[in-house]
Image 1 (spheres, rainbow, N blue to C red):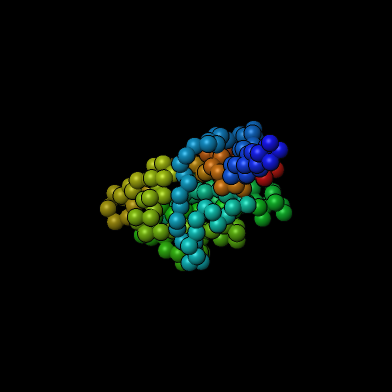
Image 2: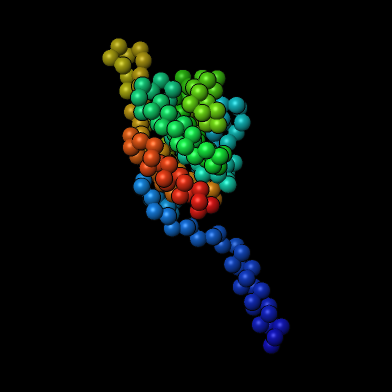
Amino acid sequence: MRALLALLLLTLSLAACDKSPPTPKVSFNNTDITGLDYAQSLALTDHNGQPRTLADFKGKVVLVFFGFTHCPDVCPTTLAEMAGVMKQLGKDAERLQVLFITLDPERDTPALLAGYVPAFDPSFLGLSGDRAATDKVIKDFKLFAQKVPSKDGKNYTIDHTAGSYVFDAQGRIRLFVRHGQGAEPILHDIKALLAAG
């Protein structure tokens, strides 16, 4: 009987090992999207030529922003805001990874991304893929992204979702960060996720 009870306890403890730890409850300033089952897939190449997925950054809080280098306002503003967050985090900035994913792979070459993205902060990574890979990520993250031709038809801009997505150190999606609110609410939420581990 004792052997049977010991075997049952061992089976239950091993079953518990398979379960991921519960998502910690945190109070956020931004939109809490914990538990949503999208924005999980991304397979792109960084501006150094290295293939990347979200799993590469496990152990860090990850902020993902979509844009393009010819963007006149939202994109540089967001990257500058995140550079400010990095400065305010001090040593904890090593535990945050900012990813800028281009919606314009036709113009945003890896060389262009390498000159643009790290200019805001050396740790920031620019990611890109071909049109099919880019469209797959757009669909998986449920983004709005639409080319808008110039009046002369010789150029274009891209209207796109202006917010960012934040993943915790376990790789779980946690937040949608609204554009244009300043660094403080973002800093609060990033610190909360870093503290939660």
